[in-house]
Length: 212
Image (tube, rainbow, N blue to C red; front, top):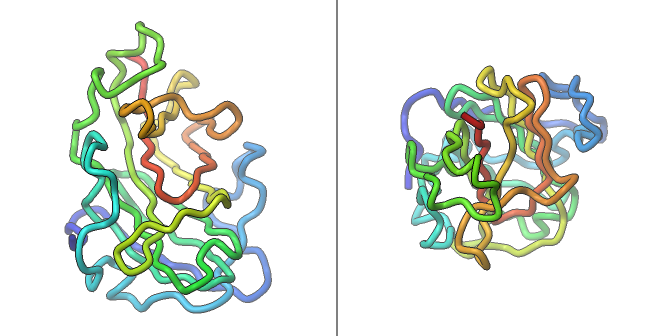
């Protein structure tokens, strides 16, 4: 699918050998260890904006919210890199480690349909939080010719949003085994002072929920 017009703004970053510091590098969360710049080729503006990404992103059909609306699709090399977009009023920055895309795959960022993740889509969440609101949701896919690439390397997703104001806000990820969104593994996600930092593997759909 093509990217929808709206508040999305794609900003691929390119660097050579040195770490780049961006708007989220000031986070004190230990998971946000340094931000490597793109060392290699990034797709041109058209591809980066999602225009020219053909077909349907390889996302499991059972995922609540769909996560099939492409926000951006950016080609990366074996050297890895970073991709920055605006989504749902938030600034999003994804860091791809070296070796995660050995054959020049595309990193695809998707979003869920609005208000599509409800209480029935949550599992292993305390009963008191079943009525929590979803305040942000996106997916990350490593695409090789329309097929998902499975890689054990962790990507780092950083999200800056004014809607993340409470320490009670937390991250859930979709589990194919549970067929629902479950709390992110301990130590893999944290929300602090408007910053969410999440360690995830390609092929993951995540959401930030706010306790009511």
